[in-house]
Length: 292
Image (tube, rainbow, N blue to C red):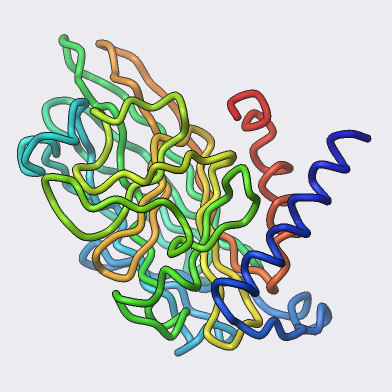
């Protein structure tokens, strides 16, 4: 009962904070319309994933997939010295546009088998990373999906933070209402860390002073009817980038010789209901309760 009351309190704070800082009119969406929709349609070429659906602003969402695989101690180092070279190949595409399978080779000897499945209101991303080499590999975290949200939010680089959010101890908090910083090797964007991630291992962008209380990052549509959000089961960081984009980046923690590790991520496309989003997140990532 105490947990339910805490959740209800957070939802009330979320609504208040969003109306205060983002000034977006929250308009209703008929549940029957959502239920009648087909699965989100998928296509991929030249590392760009396109998600198509008439409900989306402009009818599509673009995602740079996969973006980067990164070593530890990244925050104070040039990006080219942090990233491990990789190449992704599409191995299977469902002709209905509902499922894509991939193989990515990451230097020196890592193989990543991964796939994307679409449903009515979400994408599920699954990954299996295997070190086939004889030496351990310092693969600390990776960036699977750079979700480009300019068309969705109707905003540009200077103002999309007002329609984007994470969850802090104050509940749902717009990114422009956080304790942002500007001190980093590369300026622009903002990194949001769980309390247990060392800042030295973060993306070399400014790190926000506010800590996360869950692994969700998202944004609201320009008309206020929808929300788009993403999360993973092992959150290394959340990131607001420099291409009007949002990231949820999983933590790997290195790979020993012969070792394999699995990860899951979600991209949600839902009617504008933060309460529904939180319930879905806890249903899909029950292990997150232990982490946070």
